[in-house]
Image 1 (cartoon, helix red, strand yellow):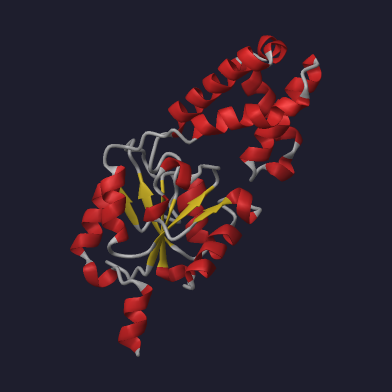
Image 2 (cartoon, rainbow, N blue to C red; image 1 turned 180 degrees about the vertical axis):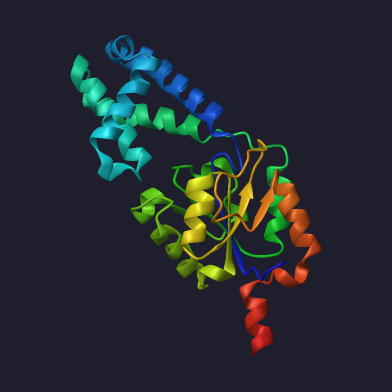
Length: 245
């Protein structure tokens, strides 16, 4: 049964683009930078070791679970300190990593589908990651980008979903959250009182009896098709307010 939607919040990593190849390239870019500018760190911390160090830093700083940027910077500071490199390199090393982190390749359907979706209702990005939509070139498609680092807590915490709804000036039940992650996106948003759409590109089986996603598609194109087929149920806030007046 269709239901009213006045806005959409959209996950980024593994919803608009696959994140694994992005991170691999970013780690390789960082390794290349270290070999040129901080060779002692490159020798002590090759890619696999640097990845393990980052995981260890993450475990040691659970209060930074929402802040991938600070986790990465702490990792670099630790790596430089342990091998005697100048920690003044941290900013430049992170910049090399982060530039590559924002060189994403969207799924083939994603951009055209996003453009179609945005013609129906406002779309806001809601992510645990630290992608820069301006650098990527997609910011124009979104009302705003609310990241876990900016908010101070990560999905599936209800507070980040509620913060996005507040910025949209809508109740959670009026907003559809769209994402690939079962727990972070679908379960988290459902428990926050939102409608949910699972982008299931890998044809996985849904593991829970409850909650279940309100919608499930294998591409963003299929969501755009659904919105096209149910125009009365995708109502921008301004339209509904005008009608009510």
